[in-house]
Image 1 (cartoon, rainbow, N blue to C red):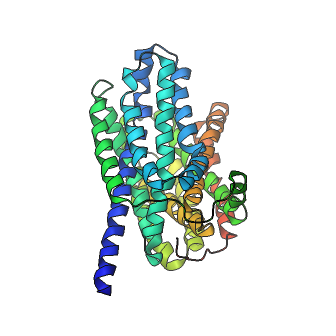
Image 2: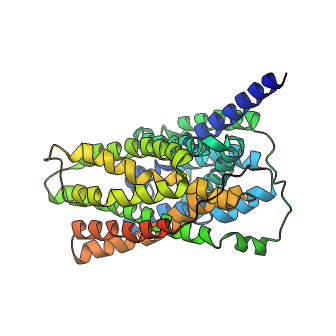
Image 3: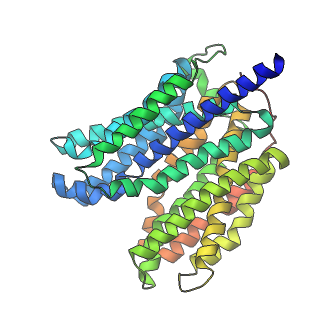
Length: 388
């Protein structure tokens, strides 16, 4: 009887993890459609490049920078709704971008879509954390992370159908949202409620250092991705080489995250965080100075993408174990706030490129991995506690 109950619980936990990972996949696929569609949106609404670029900033604000606040709201309400409504709101919002009457309404639509993404990420990560076996928590978190990375690679393919036919893809989000709501249990925070002002106390101690490490690592990766088209263009290459390089980098990121998560279960979270970041630096420098003319360029792109992103799911799990009573808020700090904060700073890399060169700016961004690794080396190893 006991064995049967355990098997049933395991199947239910697996179903929950698969459902929210599917939600992560389609949510991030929707998110990745925005940038490729900005030229079409500029043409349709007759606005400037600066105005249409504002859409990405608005989406980053509501989906990433505000994510800790949305994680707090998710803890005070039923997490089940956040996990289901996330991909639904993101999908409907971003697939209807070509069907609003004026540009101001488009900004509002993109902001609402971003809120859906911001609600989903901490809720989905919390479900995975609470239903995964403690000795495989890193692996399960990395699979959840890989779902989002795979979705980001597919998003530009969705965008290729154009604004007119894009709403058909909203149906995928509707189906995934329905399945997620049917599979996930009620997720109201069972811990004692605390005032909103006291949530600031969660963001302290090693969690602050972990967040700083993630911001520096994210800014290094974002800086490279932002400079890549300009570097390859200056070396005589075009959109095809840029697309292939980013595709290889994305696939490697997903695989690296899975490997890193599993290694952290066996070797320790801090060991993997420190090692993944530190060992990346020389390979990353060589990659920036290389081009597709070198036979090693694409294999090296794969190695760097896997190594630098191996620490992403490990960082999320570490934050959850630092704050086991508030896994949604801890997840949002690492998944949204760190990426969003880095996104707000990435324009500095562009400014440096204007003053010097894209290659110099990419190398400067890469140098941020050094203090990131040093911060990781000083982090305490979290305890593998059982989440409530």
